[in-house]
Image 1 (cartoon, rainbow, N blue to C red):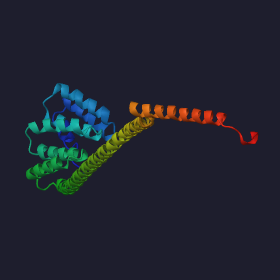
Image 2: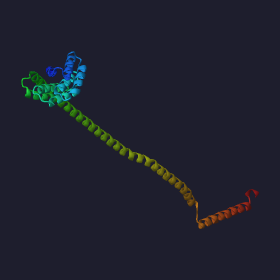
Image 3: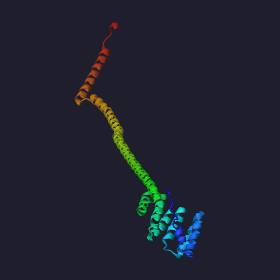
Image 4: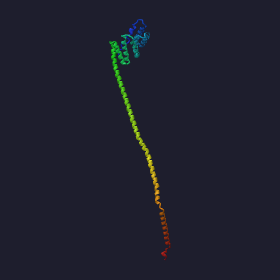
Length: 262
C-alpha cells in the first residue's frame, strides 16, 4: 500500500503567512515529523490548533501525525474535520489518507469508498488507483473468509445440534429400555412374593389334612370297635352260657367213678 501524500500541505501551511505564530509552530512540527518525532510533532500541531482550531490544514497534518503513531481512529476524525473546509486540492489528498487509515484497520469496504471518492476529485492520482486495486483484492479475500467462517459456524452448529439430537435419542432409548426392564422385573417380584405365600398356604393345607386324617383314624377305629347294646347283651349271654357249661363239665368230671377202683 502506498502512503504518499501524507503531510503534503506542510509547505502550503508554513508558507501561508510569514511571521505568523501558527505557521511558525507548523514549521517546527514539520521538522519534528521529518526526524521521526511524531509525538512531539503532534503536540506542536495541537498547540497551533489552539490559535486556529478550524484550520483544515492543521486537521490534516494532525491526522497525518496520528496516522504515523498508529492511532488510526483518531486520525480519521481529524481527516473528517479537514474535509469540512474548502479546497479542491486538499480534499482528494484527505480522502486518500482516510482510505489508508481504513485500510490499516482492515475496513476494506470503507477504504474502497474513500479511494473512489478521491479519484472522482483527482482521477490522475496513481497512488489512489494502486491502493484501490489492493483494497478491492483484500475486500474480496475478507468476504470469502467471512463466508467460510459463516459456513464453518453453521456446520459446527448443525453438528452440535445433530449431536444433541443423537444424545436425546440415546437418552430416550435408554429410558425406554430401563422402563421395560422395570416392567419385566415387577411381575417377577410379585410372583416371587406370591410363591412363598402359596407354598405356605399349601403347607398349611397339607398339615391340616394330615391332622384331620390323624383325628379321623382313631374315630374310625373307635367306630369299628363300638357295638350295639343288643350285641353286647348277646355277647354277655354267650359268655355266661359258656361259663355254665364249663362248670357243668367240671362238675361231671369230678363226680364220675374211676375204672381203676373196680
